[in-house]
Length: 309
Figure 1: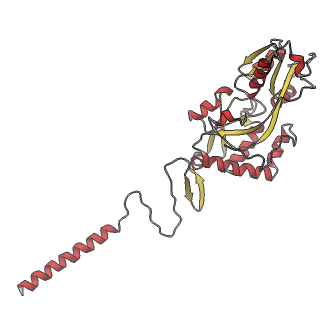
Figure 2: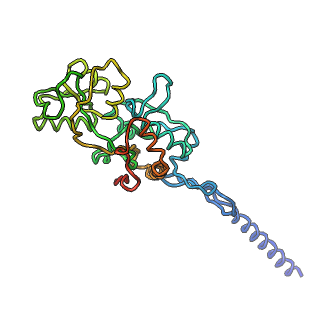
Figure 3: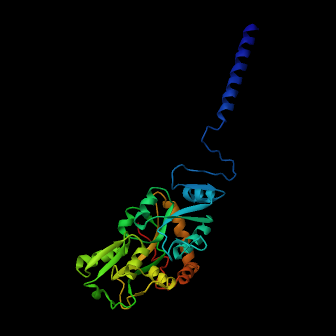
């Protein structure tokens, strides 16, 4: 009997130990997810992965922007592209209005702008002090080596700005003239090509759009090559400028405009592009272009506007 009692006691202890091990095995290890059939939130640590919340998938970047309620962009603050209105202190411009609408549709209600010299915009982006660059940037191969670009927002070209009483009308008239261009812009590259070809006498490089126009206005340079949208807008807004567009000048080149992001934000870029396509299709993007004096020549459709990275 004692032998049987001892065996029974050993069996009871074994069963209890086994039950205890089974209970411990049902505990969830730290960092693991369980599937209870309800909606779950899954967050990946790697930027560019997706977060699934309530059935919606968004990039880590968009999730962060929605949570903080704003996005910070860099711009050189040139009207009428991407700038702060001095009277209202609000962010606006053709790029500004397009971007604010785009962000609102993505669930980011506020856009904050940091003013940066144009030639340093992509540097600032990669230093991670801003989230995007929104400043009528031409999508060019050399820039695509530095940053990721959205699909095309619109297309525009250069113009030649001269004094109101100037007899300069076409490129050939610049043979013995001094021409100005802004540092870091595609227009500087145009002027540099003219200089190397001997089409102009001398090239003067300016650091800002306002400095460039003032140089033409005061006779420091005979003409400047610059953005056609900026030039046209500025002439309608500033009566102190005794300037005009060279009437017979044919644009040296037109460019496709987009916004820049960091390379790791590929998922966020795809989200921006999807909404951009919606704005092209529903007519709202064209509305903003027309608001700033642009016509359908500037419009670039969904398919032809795909950016090849």
